[in-house]
Length: 300
Ligand code: GLY
Image (cartoon, rainbow, N blue to C red; front, side, top):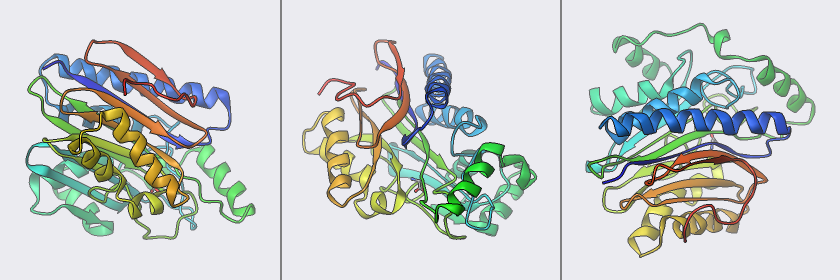
């Protein structure tokens, strides 16, 4: 099987071109690293985790460092990782003070009997696993703080942002990782779509893997990532499955996007927001990246 990887840096209104360009570049860096690992024979799970870490560490994205702030000005992180084989998954919600929540999510999957840990319990588990917490202030960027002040004045328009990666490895195994600071100005304790199985994140060996981005509540209500995988089961290509998931989101007034890889290694991407940053290395080793709205990036 030829490996492939597709990553996103969030759907929404990426207002300034220089920021949009930086996001597309960050996505390409993450996709390249993930693809290198796949070429070395590492698993899809390793590739999506590594790609997600690159994006969590990049302050341009709303995940890890650079995350959106709650209404109280804190950072609470959501993340989930899922393997198509055996429907294995692990997630964290409202986690504070860890640079790479996706690493904690992987430990939840591999080292705990649970699917999702939240808040202080998630932080305690991460520490017990030997993962180092960081000062909360280390994750807060000037950009996020500025935005928090601006949005407070504007009555909390609550803008989203997420990062995600889907991949298939040489053995044909599928995996997905999604991570976010959630929507800006969210109520403390709010959990979005990202760490909920099937909503922001889903992988099933018999269909595909999908990672969603956008305002989380509508995404959760349409169980968007599972929707895309179910469409593959019904015979859709990865691209058509992505479009169908976005149509379901749009039907209830939601705005966002989704990336998909199917079990053949075909990629799909769709969004109804103004822009969505993303990058891929496909099964032919072809690189692509961008942020503009274009109708169909991949074969239908
Ligand atoms: N999709 C990210 C969130 O709403 O939390």
